[in-house]
Length: 431
Image 1 (tube, rainbow, N blue to C red):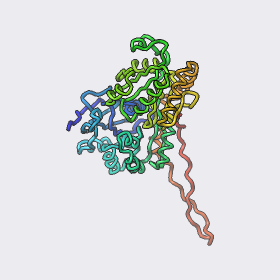
Image 2: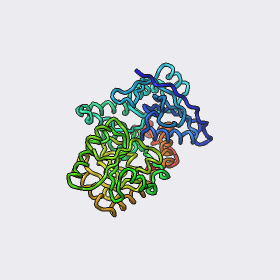
Image 3: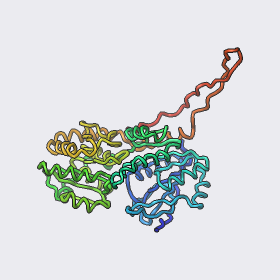
Image 4: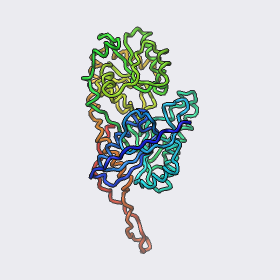
């Protein structure tokens, strides 16, 4: 077993702002050792909260080689490598020293970001302290079973998630479609939206680079179908491969560019031999790759939001995606892209072929997606999250008793509905 290396960062001094005095403990299974959409969102939230005067302390497994410089104060949690997925770490829970650290920090609220072993043990400890607990939902773990040949465990997974989430003070979904699913699954009575934003100074159509395309071996006249994400099967790689094979069977000329890295890379090389695999890209290199594509193909059904979908929209691309949580809240079918029934190879092929054949349709859909992406501002979204925290910590006042006459003439006590607490309006979440 390999224990993660302790890593601490100097805390950022809080500003004198409306969040002054609020203390939040964030429990994360991955805060900075692998870069993904979930921990990027958490880091942006922590940075925003600290700018607003909130003191945040993050407890997470760490690595000697973090993927990026994190925000806030990070406290290392002992961990082991995940079997079969060694890039991920499994937090082993809170040691006595970590429990003492968390107790001395005295958080007003504990935020859990994953229903893993660390999350379960942190939840139990926070309950013993009497601290309100909330959780954000970042992926549909219950859908993973079918990608590993054990789909019969899906219902068991849902029950385990319901046990974890149902008694929390609130849970946060990144999209309205995901929130609807959580309500339907009876995960919690208090589901709120914490959406995601996009850096529109980074992701934009003007980053399209003909020289980059040529360097990748793409002719100016060729149309590129792009995929961006971790190269793991739960991202729908089997659907990507089958759909590309269908396009080739139909004789639809195109090129495939896949951005990302992961354990399924060799599988993709075998099943989509003509694909250009760029490996992991980030920053301006990633933004250039997006803008240099002609459309994004995202058949995944495991997303709760779909950061790659929003980044593609901000880059001016039409998006062909599965009808699923996340994408259904982002893509306007027939306007900014196409939404296709999950796993429908013919449907995906039809949609991609339509955009490949019609450059005007690509431009129109890309322009609509670009306009829609402007609603997703990070500060407004994280400001809404801070208001959610406040609503948990400042419940509506209790009902006041008032005397009412009994039928026999005596008096009885009845509750009066409380006056609604006056709060600033929540910022738009973009959902």
